[in-house]
Length: 538
Image 1 (tube, rainbow, N blue to C red):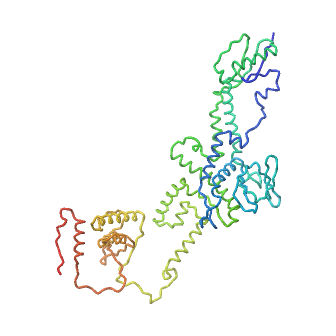
Image 2 (tube, rainbow, N blue to C red):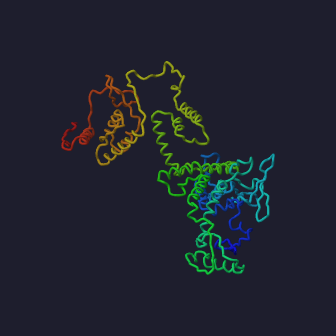
């Protein structure tokens, strides 16, 4: 009985059964490992590239400033500021891909800095001494090595965990296996459709055909059925008894979607990027929260690392400070506005400002502690307190005291709600005065104390111009209690100087009468206005 000739066929080439050594080319080497390198993962796997670009875009958009001395001092214009966006973008990308980044100091022949240039991290090899640590670098370009001094470069390293010196690894190295899965899946799909979606299999022919006949059959089979997309769906008729056994799995049998989703999740996790930043979020609130999380947990820590390296190697030696002001970004401003309102409410309720700030998690400038803030506020409070009112100070016997007949003055702090109502009242009074009416207009408020309202009505009754109206709303708004135990408060004006002798008669002028008429017309119903008639006799 004739044995069939068996050929392995993958729609592009046929391999005789006897050529066993070529099977590894067909089925793959079982010992092969990850073939992608970090740069390949960035250029060939879209998910990796998107994560790297997203982080680099976010970091390079952080506002930067250079100050003379410490941060918060006099801001100066750095002459190479126009280079910063591109340098920061490349630095962030290199730290993610390689775990290290380098800037070359460009100098003229006199050694004066003329700017900076980003270098390919793989071209730089740091040199270490057992006693001195980092002593220099070697830069290799097209097989030629150039020695560099430590001061020739500005270097940024991800902190190492597997060694005591040198740079660590970027997150792309961690995600290489997941990137390889996505890359292989993409390659499989591309190759499958490039071959007309024809599967790999074994082609067997009955009998013992010659090698020439097998070659002709192979060529015919490839031409008719394995020519790629252009032959998809074609039908071929043959006279020989040929059997084709499929050995590869179809795309629908590989569960590619689940495998790729798992790989994408691993890449996003290694990158520190929420998946909602890479695809549609469930809702707006979720997107906002994840956007803030990206900055606070991923972008800002990398910015701190870069900011520290630049200050240590570039700016501090010149007596300057480089600052990346991420807190001014919109993503943090919404939170800051909310916290500021909470701080105002807590302090108005009587909570010390330093305790309220610590409770709300405010960051203090220049690495100040909350204890230092408390000490500073106590010191300022002591400086602003008159000597005779400071603790432990005894007033002399001859010190003047308030007369026993003087009513006690009380002044309540103005809260935010009271301040808003006072602003509305002032605007209403100014509008009334501008329209030719009196400034003392009716105003209803649920938060302005009755005593304060009484003082304002008394002041506005005599206000004749806009300046007087504005002055009427200037604190303090003092009040006193009735001498006869009445709980209500009356306006009380503190008079300076010697008291005037009592008057036996009250003098009323024409202006007093006119103001009284205007007051009557402003507060009375329209059907009884202009009913008063009075005059002043000479």
